[in-house]
Image (tube, rainbow, N blue to C red):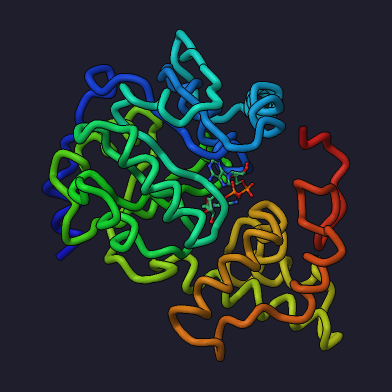
Length: 299
Ligand SMILES: NC(=O)c1ccc[n+]([C@@H]2O[C@H](COP(=O)([O-])OP(=O)(O)OC[C@H]3O[C@@H](n4cnc5c(N)ncnc54)[C@H](O)[C@@H]3O)[C@@H](O)[C@H]2O)c1
């Protein structure tokens, strides 16, 4: 049924009619999204509660741009969009679409959505970029549940092919149209699914990552062998452990906690290996070491 809805709503609103895109959260995903939006010629207003993350964001967007040029990804717009970095959430008023990318924690997200509802007028569409947090409880916190939907982006956004979109029972056609318009501009397709914790991708992917990490403790294979098997036998592009490093081990563990809270601990309790990596600060690419070592400067 949702798939039909996606086809019916494929007509997106021209982002030019929508105004700047607001981005909340200047972490791994926020920065990746800002880079993609600017490259597509869209203006962006970026907010984070951490001044350090905000200060670092323009430099990290420039790094993402350098990497994208080297890897010759999708052609960008002739004229890049403009970035405005703001310490006050209220400055997102006037954005046509706001994408929330804060930490994968239900309570943190709830507070942000209460605050967004206070500062935005009813016309601004709000997309939740989350790995597993259900969208409906966030939508009904505010006075305009019709403007809220889920948009589970893949990282890096600029080269990703598809977004997993979550339409709740409240989401309006208009909200879906605004998001569709922006995704069209980014050159990214979407598949619309129902609102369950973890949706499709992470209800499956997190089990792969967790189990692959547990295999290492059992001495069955090295990280390189695990990923090699997934690439060679199943045609995956990277393999679960390299993917986990790109996502961030902290976000992986947070996501498993959300999944365990909703689906029960049997399948989703983080493995000892993941917890040990988190405690050691081995967070993947963002800290320089995860399942693999990274030399590039993340900041
Ligand atoms: N990392 C990935 O590959 C990936 C992919 C898809 C979706 N996601 C989801 O995107 C979201 C962000 O993930 P991430 O990897 O960028 O996390 P991250 O830890 O790198 O960044 C989170 C950012 O949110 C900010 N933040 C926290 N609370 C805030 C608040 N109250 N107001 C404003 N800013 C706040 C933090 O300061 C931080 O900069 C999560 O929900 C995650 O599950 C992540």
